[in-house]
Structure formats: C-alpha cells, structure tokens
Figure 1 (cartoon, rainbow, N blue to C red):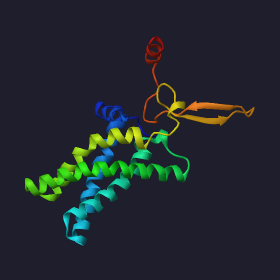
Figure 2 (figure 1 turned 120 degrees about the vertical axis):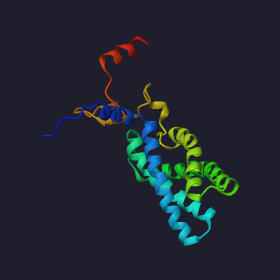
Figure 3 (figure 1 turned 180 degrees about the vertical axis):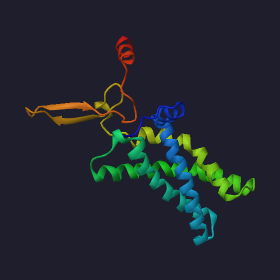
Figure 4 (figure 1 turned 90 degrees about the vertical axis):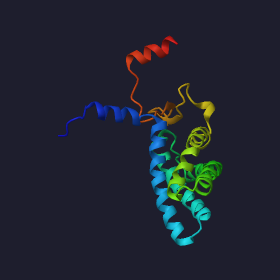
Length: 190
C-alpha cells in the first residue's frame, strides 16, 4: 500500500496546483517548450523566421487549448463535439490577438536588440501570457449559461432522480478542496 505523502514541499505543490492561474501557467510553460520545438522544425523547413514563428505559435496554441480544457478548466468540459469546436475557434481568435502581442515583442527583441530567436520567442510569449489568461478565462472556457451559475461560479449539471424529477447540481473544480466548516460558517456569515 502506498503511503500518503505529507511533506511540506509536496503539500505546497499540491496546494499551488489547485489554483487555475498556476495550472494555466504550467501548461503555458509546456507550450513554450513545444513552441520552440515547433519553431526549430519550421525554421529548418521554411528558413524564414516570421512565417516559422506563426506556424509554431498555431501548433503550440492548439495543444495548449486541449490541455487547458482538460486540466485547468475540467469543470467546464464540453459534452458535445460542436462545443469543443466552438471553444477551439474562440481560443484561436483569442490567440490571434495574443499572437500580435507576442510576435511584436519577439520581433522587437530579435531584430532591434539582436536577441537570438530562441530567446526572443519565449520573451514574446511571456508578454502575451497575462492577456491571454484573462481573455481565455472569461471568453473561451466559460459555458454560455453564465446566468444559471451559482454565486461561486460553478456551472450547473442536470440529472434525474429516481422519480424522474430534475435535480440541478453544481460541479466544482476537482482540484479545489472541499470547504471546511470554518469556510462554510464564514460564507454564511457574509
């Protein structure tokens, strides 16, 4: 039987990964590595940095979309292919504006400050990160039925009970721990 890990570092990492912003950032970090790998491949293939940059950005963005949908926003996971495609389209549209920010900074650092393209590339990506998180959190991954959400922002799910009565439940983020008695009392007191 496996022992439950309770070291302070392990607890710190688990608590940190419960935050959406940190999960979004971790996936973004993976995206930077994937972006640089794709950039290397497209540079070898096309031998023209601006076009290779755009193709690399599109590849890493698509992968990041799916990882974020599955890991960062699992409580908003779509149940139909059409919704996945709509969100992918929204993510790509969001990324076009983030691409402008990222690409501008990457070109600035590469051509003006003569920074290597593999260093300029992640610098540009970092500049677009905060913008992309805010827009994605509000525009891409949230379901349309915002008005039906609970006060804590959790989306409803409808099921039928044994009497075929509709029961509406709210799905919570699986990485968020359940509230303690103190938190429940505090939220009621507010």
